[in-house]
Every structure is written in C-alpha cells, then in structure tokens.
Length: 325
Image 1 (cartoon, rainbow, N blue to C red):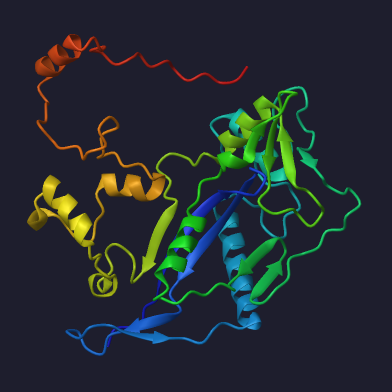
Image 2 (image 1 turned 90 degrees about the vertical axis):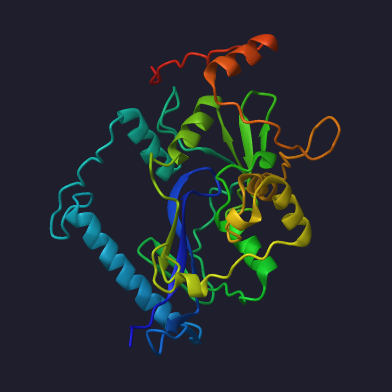
C-alpha cells in the first residue's frame, strides 16, 4: 500500500509591515493525510489532531537546525566552531546588496543619511521588546513558527480571504501618503507594541526599500507540495473541479468552445476581474460585452491599420538600465 501523503501550498513573502526585507513563509497545510487502500481505489482523507505547543516547538527546532546546516553547507554561514565572520553574499551589484542588508536592519542604504535608522512615527524609544506569545507559537533564536489558524474545508469564503492575505502584494497604496515636506509616510495596519504607527521615507529611501522587495528573476513565490504538487499521482482525485455558474458558463460560450475548455481553469479575463475588479470584456463606452471580430497577425495589415488610426507602428526604444551614481 502506498505511504500516506499530505499536501501544502507555500507562499514566500519578502516584506514586513514597514516595507522592510523580511523573508518568511506562509504555508497552507492540510490538517491530515491521504491514504490509498489499493492502487485502483480513490484516496481517503484522515484528519489528524491539532498540534500541541510542544510539537510546534520541536518542529521549529528541527527546521532551524536543518536550515542552519543548509546555509553552512552552501557557504552563506560559517561553521559553528568557526569564529570568523560570515562570507559576503554573492550579489552581482554591491548597491543591491547594500539595499538588502540595510532593509533587513531597518536602516537607510543610500544617500546622505546612509546608515541611519528608518524614521518611525509614534515610537517610544524606552519601550521594552516583548517577544510574541500565544497558542501554538514557538520562538527560538530569531526563528518563529505559528500554527494557530485553522479553517474548515467547507468555509470557502474564509479560506479565500486567507489566500488573499498570504498572497497580498508588499505595498498597500491606500496607506501610503506624500507629506508636505516631500517625504513619504507609510501607515501601519496595526500599531507596533512600542507605539509605532507609521514610517517615513525620503523619496530615494522609498525607492531603495521597494527595490529590495523585488524578487530575483525566475523565483517562484508560490509552490505546491505533496498531493497538491502539479505532478502528484493523486492530485486529480483530490483537487476539486471548478463548477462554473450559469452566467459564467454563458459568457464562456460566447467566447470559446466549451468542449475545448478545461473547467478547472479560469480565463485571463476572469482572473483580471477576480483580482483587480476590472472587467476587460465590457466596453467602456456603451457598457455592453465586447466580442471578437477578427484576430490580426499579419504585420503589413496591422501596420496599415495603425497608420490609418494615427498610431505609432513601431514600439518605443528601450533604454539600458542605469545603476545609481
């Protein structure tokens, strides 16, 4: 009989509440395992009891040991018995590496105020540090593991809110304002224990903080594991199929052939509407649904139409990237 398998979806977040570089993972884990009694039988889900505080602490200790061993093996950290400093990180750009280091430390990397801490508004400098505490929460040597959120599989609305939260972007534009003195003020969603309610940035400092939050090329921010992995043998039997609503089915029928469309996939237009509340298939002038008249791919025909409409026929030139002075 095959071994029991679990499943998880991991979201890598690089940012903290103050637009600082704070890499951490939000992981949605199935609270049980799947077993298959026979090769031709469907998998069966077995719910496991909630983890205890002791089990969370033991898991964090194991993760911390394995991560430290991994960073030591690839040369990021020195060996435990070596008193030398850690080797410099292999960044292609020293300026980008400086932005990373300063963002992790809550300091400024560039400009006349390089090395100074980021201004925190409302902070009490005499406030003592209070480590986080709560149920199913472990803190060890700077590592934190929290497993206190549990959602029923039938509560789809709350599950969607949680997925939107863990996959949210780094910057909430509604909390960013430009002050009269030219600095940018970023308001926190919740005040810190030391009283901090917002952080203030000079324009150059804000750009450097945002640059540190941009993930490297070809880096996956969402990964699927176990039975939820793309090539998992039991995935088709576990992942539910999306049943389109009647109105959504009618809209799809106007655009595509239903027989050739995978019902488990959303179209790009549906994703744009779900994520950005932007209905790209509705005309801005008359408010009626758009429909496909023709698909033009012949360059001479496309160029002739653009010329007739008075639009440019060539793309604008791309300027090479420039490093800060």
